[in-house]
Image (tube, rainbow, N blue to C red; front, side, top):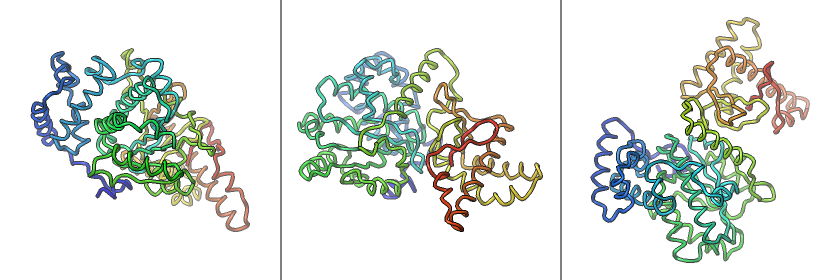
Length: 426
């Protein structure tokens, strides 16, 4: 089942029932009390931290990370609190981190883009973390990198689906990373960060340098650091960043177009910096007491995305395109509005049966909002039908007379659709 989980086909997550959750939470508390010493936990208890002591959603993160093994979850939670206390301070035993908790050097580390949460998920709905750590870090920047890691870990933990299924790590190891991980204390710290994460790693893809000496060194220390002996089977190694190796990621359901690497192998930061701006706006709204319950920061794998002037990539959009295609002949062979509406209603019902949503980008804030106005939704789906018809006609045209019209339609060019100016990405 681990092999199937790596590919995003099936998962080892535990079926959750109200009875299972309550029993497991009680067992977790019993196991925590058996651990000594646990200074960070004891400090939180002495301060009567609601988040640590009584917030079920916080404690459930650790149970899910260790598949409801209460003993292992207790050890993970205690270790996690020690990290928070050491690198963040007392406040971090009471609530998740916010952007405004970061120092100037922390923010610089975050904005660098060397570690990013990608905008789209893998085909199984798991969030993907991309990491290309620098190898020349001094003590100050190392601490900032750890604080950035903890901030992004809290953000990953906001996603319930990722809590249950784990997250995917794409790790690019440069040759100069040897200098960063050459001492035993650095290895212990690196391993501790991974093993005290409140979200489990369900798949690890590591790109190694082509230099043989560096390759062997990094392979050894990363296997040691990134996973326990029971989980090392989750690691996949690749030598170099060739397109062939990147395409191998596609077999694991990872959208390689969203990997923030340019053709010159430099890290791209455009999407990441937009992600940072969106987080800041979102957290300001939380601080101001605004209702953010309808704001969607990480669309689901079955969601359909509409964006004015944008070109969003999402598995849901690809699936939606395939759902539309068999209906094209029926849709365009009739002028009856009721028949067309019926076909659109069928599509809506099918997407909703997968818990998918139809989302529109709030360009000012950078988050997504569900389209609740049925007239607007039907107009956008109508535009999607026309867009898909163009794609199919171009494909047939190419097959019959060798036209290369489809090169334009299948590329990254944007297609204007409908009177509302909405672009729909298939």
